[in-house]
Image 1 (cartoon, rainbow over the protein chains, first blue to last red):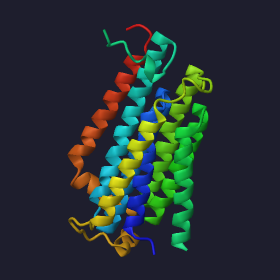
Image 2: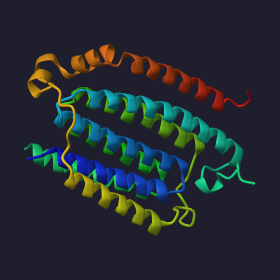
Image 3: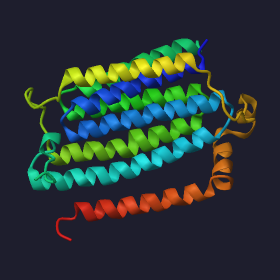
Image 4: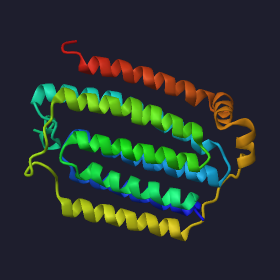
Amino acid sequence: MITVYHYLILSAIIFSIGTFGVLTRKNAIVIFMCIELMLNSVNLTFIALSRHLQNMDGQIFVFFVMTVAAAEAAVGLALMIAFYRNRGSIDSDDFNMLKW
Amino acid sequence: MLSILFYLFAVVAIFSAFYVTKARSPVNSALCLVTTFICFAVLYITLDAPFMAAIQIMVYAGAIMVLIVFVIMLLNLGTAVKKRYTHGLAWGGALSILMLFITNLFIRRGVPTGKVGEITTQTIHNYGHTELIGRAMFTDFLLPFEIASILLLVAIVGAVILSKREV
């Protein structure tokens, strides 16, 4: 029997994998994809708890998380293109233009 | 039957999510991320949320992944050189395992409670999930819905301005 705890633990595992990717990778696009992974695991938590509590509000919140993720994708990837034009790479080690 | 489905897709999701963080080439990461998204969509269907599964496929596996793959192709990034591949693996791994441990502790210790509504499986089968979502969205959550549309507009304008060559 699958309970809500199974879904919660699965989303905890996926969230930790996303954290691992954000902390260890250097390529900014891969870091971005790991952030998407973390957002998705939170979405799974929302939907599982919404099903468990028989309440629709969690699923509405998932809708807004997806909206914010889409906006973030548009702006973040435009930022990466702009950065690549300036520096010729998107390694996170090269993100030091504000340092002096 | 449902538990077999759950475990199958959970294992595939975990392995492909791990390969997203491990793949040397960003294109492989993107493909594994699509696999994870599709597994999540199946899990949403097992949670009686077919509309969420549909927009998971359309928005995440469609729109956002197309954008990411487009940028990867545009920037023409090769596979990562081993020396410039990762930051400290030990610290990142230790921190994420610690996070996994703490979240598991909280999940096992607590009981999920909250405001219990009346959306049962029978209600979803009677009205349809899409209708229930739409009804909630356009009555109780109308203002956040409008704010989300403004947010998307601002994001589009920002992306255009940022990627223009000279302003």
